Each structure stands twice: as structure tokens, then as C-alpha cells.
Amino acid sequence: MTEPLFLKPVFQEKIWGGRKLAEEFDYELPAGDIGECWAISAHPHGPSTIENGPLKGLTLDQAWAQHRDYFGNAKGEVFPLLTKILDAEASLSVQVHPDDAYAAAHEGPTELGKTECWYILDAEPGAYLIYGHYAKTESELADMIHQGQWDQLLRKVPVKTGDFFYVPSGTIHALNKGIMALETQQSSDTTYRLYDYDRVDAKTGEKRELHLQQSIDTTTVPHHDPELNIQTKQVGASTITTYVQPPMSPFFSVYQWLVKDQLHFDRTNAPYTLVSVVDGAGELVVDGQVYPIHKNMHFVLPFAIKAWDLRGDMQIIASEPGESTK
Image (cartoon, helix red, strand yellow):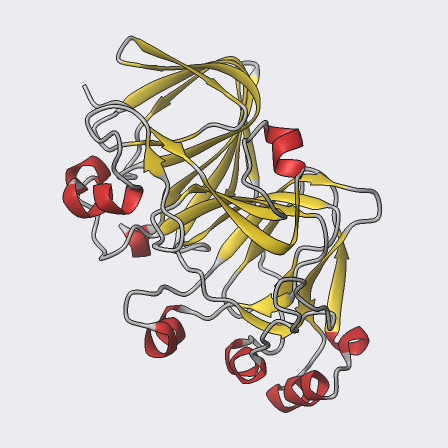
């Protein structure tokens, strides 16, 4: 029997981070302003470590390289997805991410582009996102960036707990102060900053680097909101919400599983499934084996697990690789 792969997260210090990940998720954080929990990661900047079973002690990138059968012999040099929890104690920089072709050409052959999405775990009253822009042409975009016309350029969108946003590569965006989100993304750490509020990094005494030309090169003009087709299905007392899936999202499918009592799953055609428990507690049952699970736990269900049951009272965000990443 193949077991779930339970993972130890990696925590990243950020100028905009805080300590809320300890308060809300009971994580033991390192010192500093911690902005990101890299919960399910095989990226070299912070790979998760497997905590159980025959692969215990391996990082997820090592498991991908050495035991591809666990992942349905999926293609690709790198594990394609990355799950994070972000705590915006202060606002993130206004930024944009490249697509696969631009990242490969400018950031190295193994660096992916970055399409991502956010499930908003918590948003303080009055919180908002930067999501898109108002420039009509590439030349107008460049002029507004170089002239610092941020109020005219940047699109502010109110946000509340439970919202979902899909953020394709090329989208100008930022999580702002008072937001905590679970992010599902391509496994990339390439960010182009076009505005950082002129703040100074206390450690270096310098402003953080901006990437104006790369931002202009990679931003989609004009901006259009993706047309989401969010679907919710009632299964007994539980609900399954599908936020994105192919063909709209070629890189991943993302779901919310609200477990009330019990919820059964049979594997579809996905080679593996990524699972994050963001609230509550209960049990995962695989081939009669019971695994207690609770808020702050993250794991991968490998290809050999063809069915599983969830019992308890839990909120879970799950994802699977899209057609372009299998």
C-alpha cells in the first residue's frame, strides 16, 4: 500500500510578513517577519520534506527525481506545482510574473512561468487587492509606470474571506495589508516588481530592486478578468467546489472540500493530488488505514492511492496538475 506523503513546510521571511502564521496555524516559526509558508514545494528555494513512509527524509524534489512512479510517471523535469500560505502583515510589492516561454528565456531553462490563484483565508475589513490595470496600450502602460502614475494605473478590488482569484501570468497584482491567502501556483519563484511603495529593507538599508522593463515586457495589455465558472456540488452534508480546471486553467485544477461527516473520493485521471487542511480536524482513510489530520497539515496523495475517504469537520483546499503539467 502506498501512503500519503505528509510534508514539513518551509517558512520564508519577507519584508511584508509577520507572525500570524503561528497564531492562526500553530506553526513553529523561525525568528523574523515570516510572510510565506511553502507548504507543498519542490522548488530549490524551499523544498518540503517528506515526514513518513518509505520516502521519509527525502525532499519533494528528490522524490520527484528518484521515485516518479509515486506521481504516475508524470512528465517534466521539475515538480510543476507549489502550494503556499501567505500572511500579508503589510502590502506586498505590486508585481507581475512571466509565462513559461519568457521565464525559460530569461530566468533559466528549468524555471517555469507563474500562473497562480488565491483562496482568501482571511481578510480584514476594508482589505483590497491590486488586480489588473487601466492602461489600454503597451506604450500607455510604459508611460504610466515610468511616471509613477500608480493611482491612475492600478486597479483596486475589494476582498473578503472566502473569495477566490485566478491570476494568470502577465497579470499585475498584489496582496495588500490584512490578507491571508492560500496560493496554488506553478512552481516558480520569479517575480518582477514594478512598485514597492518606496520602502526600505531594514536589513540592507536599501530599497528593494525593481524590474520595470521586465514588468512592461510581460504584462498583458489590456487587462481582462478571467471568466471563472465556479461550480459547487452537494454530496450528502459535504460540498465540493471546483474553482478552476482545464481548459481554462491549463496548469492546475483547484477545489475546496468542505467535509461534514464523510466524503468519499475515487481518483480521476490526475496522477496525484495536493491537499491542504486549512480549518478543522478529522481523518483521512486509505485502504482501511486511518490518518488523523487537522488544520496546518499538507500532504500529497500519490498515484497508487485510487480512493480515499475524509471524515470529520474540515475545510480543505486541494489541487491537481493540469494537462500541460502531466
